[in-house]
Length: 342
Image 1 (cartoon, rainbow, N blue to C red):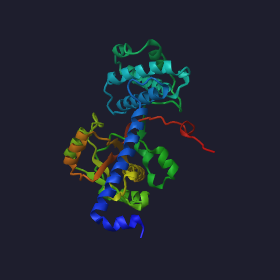
Image 2 (cartoon, one colour):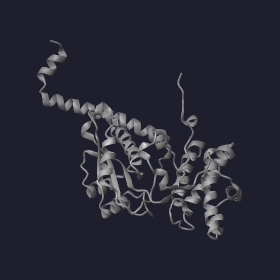
Image 3 (cartoon, rainbow, N blue to C red):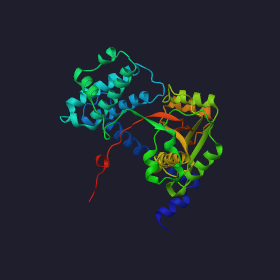
Image 4 (cartoon, rainbow, N blue to C red):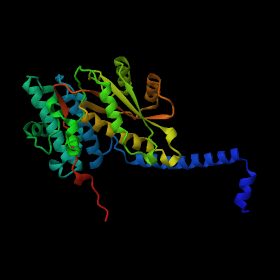
């Protein structure tokens, strides 16, 4: 009998279990700490001055402006705070990128600002106070900017007719046509349709087929309203008819090495949900659920979410209105994200 076998025989099973648990805890803690330090070392902070970090912040603020432009009833003069951030980032990018006039994010910002100017001018709104926020070169460049297919940030109108026969579309057409929709018709969402969506989504792959993802369907408008107030990212929009809360059951995982898997599997499942909702003719918008401790606690209490489930995301769901403004949300090209390793 080896020494290891002898020790194993002498040490009671509960003690051995505790030793294994302690080792697992320490190993996971070290790995998670390293991951956190790497993350915090590279994220884009407000004071970041290099090109990539500035672009990150600018892209975030362009989308904030797009959301304001995507309301059916445009609130004239909106967004002074985000406009100040956009002009700040564009000015910083002019210094960080010698080729800024051809920078995709810089052009997208000009495109979104161009729409902001034109739509306000069409309604006779005095933009003098807004213009004062910007350096003259940026304001004038935006005003004269001619958006093209590649750089057309801002919003566009989606017609309900374009969603006809979505279930019969090829996947490429379905994926190309899916956009986040934040305003919905008053028509109730069919439970029968939602059940079909869930059934299709169950084909989503998961680690070792453990299927940890859970869906909490909320239809009570008061609970939806409160949940989104706590979440904080759906302000100024009407309460959606249905809100889905996607979570992952941690009991499906077996080691600290899998600590990110709840979000990987949950994200895969949520994307399947979004495509299935599109296929069955329902409008949807994914909403962030990376909560602070306080928001997490409030959400769990409101929705009765058990401690062993981790939040992945919300998805607002409704029927398409006859027409609705949509954020353009310009995408990077494959060349911008692809690295081929030979």
